[in-house]
Length: 409
Image (cartoon, rainbow, N blue to C red; front, side, top):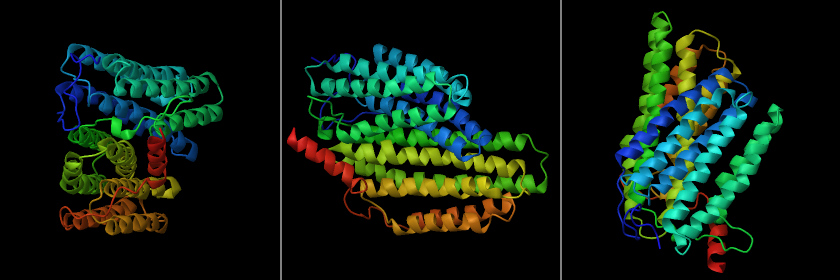
């Protein structure tokens, strides 16, 4: 029997609200995102970008697993609050190791991340019990976390940076792919996504909140950059243009996409978990990562607005907003609302403008990117509310594979 003393109300038509403990937990991720943006800022190479991506995906997946767990576990109950407090400590340790994760603190990062994953999954197995479908689901999730953990620890124990990056990339791929095959294990059937009785409004609100944390970190980064310069006309202009870029991206999501997304999740009557997985676990990861990249681009522009662009800055400056809009498009397609063509047109324009303006100054490229982002924001506000784009087919191949596994089990 499930431990009802630590669980929210169960059932397919339930409503779950975000608690103060969940908001408190998210404060750890302000620090985590600051560390990630600093890692990218210090390592503006292809290898550095790949390293930051792997670290980000691990940090994101730890947050995502907790967000899903609190969809069923009640953070207002003392055992759950203590669980989240313990995971906050592990999250702080993991985040503190980010800057040296590929040098001297790899084992610290890996063990803290693995601790968060195993502790959360094990608690949920205990909370539901193995006689319940959700308890068995979490037991299979726990097994896959252990499988990925082998690669995490192996990577941490190697002293070769390239080997560590490769092993950790495999580990994070195993973690992220496990839900797509239903946490299949030899001798065990996949866990049908319909068995995960997700409260859609809760996961939508959690996605909004973590994206707000990312935007908050970008403000810290921009303000910190401006505090270190002399306040010349170029510095002030870069600050204003950078703020307009952040505001444009924020408005695309919070003034248009977020309300429609939340409504779609709340109105979904069947298999909410499948919708939540693609629209929030995966698409929102793209958006949050993009905001971190944008913050680094603005930092570079504010610190030296007249500096030559260069390949690294051009990629970061145009790539960040483009990546954000890709995340919006993936989420729109998964949720089945909104027009994709204007969003994708803006992505193409950003991909073209980056190389074209590579001979200008950082401020010039940032201004051009901001104009495109503002145009995308205006286009988003003109979209008719509730316009559909079709069913959830963004991840059609993976989706069809799990459906086949579900029906054959």
